[in-house]
Image (cartoon, rainbow, N blue to C red):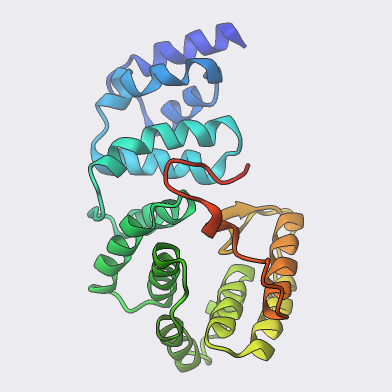
Amino acid sequence: RERASRVAFQVLDLKKPSFRLLVGALRLIQSETFTQVPKCKSVLSLNIEQRVRLVTELYFSERGALRNLAHQLVRPIIDGEIVSVADKDLQHELGLLYISIGEFQLAKRLFEDLAQVTLEITTTFNLAMAAWGESRNHTKLDFENVIKIHEANQEDEDSHDSANYLQCIGLAYWAVGDGTKALEYAEKSLQFLVGYRPTFSCWRYLYVNRREFKTDINEFKRLVEGDETMQPVFLKNISNQLPFQ
């Protein structure tokens, strides 16, 4: 393991290794040497979009130590208050990461920026969630906008057949006061879990396994049924702290 880590640092000292080679090298680094990574040539040479891509790849596809490394690498992005990148898909991923690590104000500004160029339901929903995280209280009007878009596109069944989408709509219905539909969509989301493939959960803003997603849905159902001790995991994440792994 130590030898593999040394070889990995040789790769990191290259000025412009391929993205796959860079990610592969980072997976071999020993956690006690993570503090050296931000100073490596390959990392320093990354432009903002390349850094965002690297950070979101590590953060959302890995667990444990590498997620902590991603948090170190994202600090310059946060400190620079980056809320816009040219690639809008990448900007969306950065927004999800901001919410996941408790940078709600930056996330809100980022999704407000995206909302100026798209009225997609994903942007509207994540903007509502970022605002919830920032104020610590959800706003009914924000989620009513989500429901309006959803109900206006009921015929588009293909966009409604994912566990994450149904989970999000269930949460939006709860936020506007419709507990019956909230529970209906929560239950339906479980039917769309696909094998052992990780699923994004808006309860914690992380990709989770099948068991974890079911746990999130059960906690959400308790919230809907009046358990005031229940709150989404993402709300417990505050800036500079990582969500549980």
